[in-house]
Length: 268
Length: 268
Image (cartoon, rainbow over all chains, first blue to last red; front, top):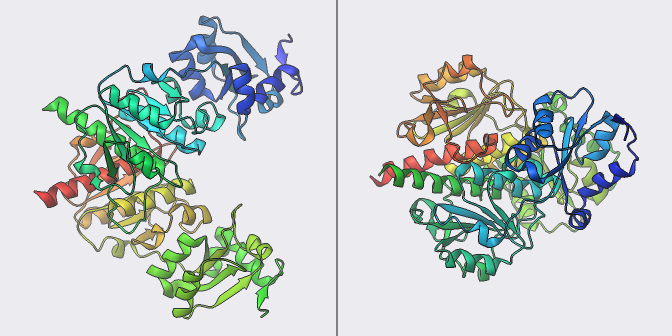
């Protein structure tokens, strides 16, 4: 192994770049996180899942390299051409890591019985999925659950748009929506579908007890058959002339309403 | 003028495509809106500002063509190549309009004394700016004000990401931040800076009186000198391990807190 990797066509580099594709991720059980924010959170919250680190020559992220060395994670130096070949982004940020998956079982995601969790049902856009995970983390969700037909959690754009929240809370993937709803209810959670077709306005929703927010696809929302499984269908009120909020905005408003309700309960 | 425009290199087509650039928009006093949602809202809320409509042959937007004809707006048919040349988007949606600006003066944006307004200070990312305008509309803001150093309101990506809200509420552009803050205060509004450095948590902010939300740049927030001009600096609480929310999410949470406060006042 050379001191500094300089061949963007090396097998090692090609293997990692291939992890931009879901099939390669699933075959090898690894994914890539690029940029200091994601790498830092992976090293802080799940160092045992980080298999190797790549740092561009002259990269200023010495704090991250120290964290990696403390955790006995191999660090490879590379030049800018190799870094650009490794990661699936237009603006590489000088540092990237290869990680093993961090998702948990549905049971484990529902093990903490209080507060609220967020379920993404058939959410396909990676930026939306990542942003909702980030918002759920910020609002204090106990877990996030992605249904089987949703975007892959380890898609590079999902990873990036979680801004590190991927490592902050339990996230389950792979179950069908019906199974997720049933498991939430069995764990004592009311399931609230967030949907423009809801008759309950968000300020009137009962958020004082453990609940699960069910967020639908960005284009077509939630199917009637899915809404029928839920305990309530809740609509974010639209006060002006706007038709709707986008998925990430609606989800953020809902989870912050849950956070505010939790604060009110604590203070009462 | 041919019945159907088929030459993507025609002067008329090039002139409109040039409106993707700010300099051309400012020189000609026109901008382009593409897609049925934006075109519909322009025709519904400000038909007098729509100078012409372009519809791709076979486009199904007959309702919009009828609206345009009722308002005596010239409609030009074109083929797919011309439509692709007209608009600055990867996926043209078969209909586009050329419009005149709809922004209003700062005084006019502050003429309605109740509720809340949203001020964007040096917001540079077009998607963020448009999404905040959409969220402000949905939450019932009285107006939106963009500071002089912000992204151009008529940037195609801003227009698109407002999802039609560009035409729904008064929007002022061009004033300096100091001038905007002073005008808001002179109009009886408390100015609340939304910033991670705030000491007042959002649930504790006084939203019961007329106020203005001041949102800073996506990367560097609000400068200390700007925060010092404000009546309060408010922080969205972060409950989990997330470092922050992105600008559009934080803005949406803030404006929906204002909307909820207004609802509580109405119900009390």
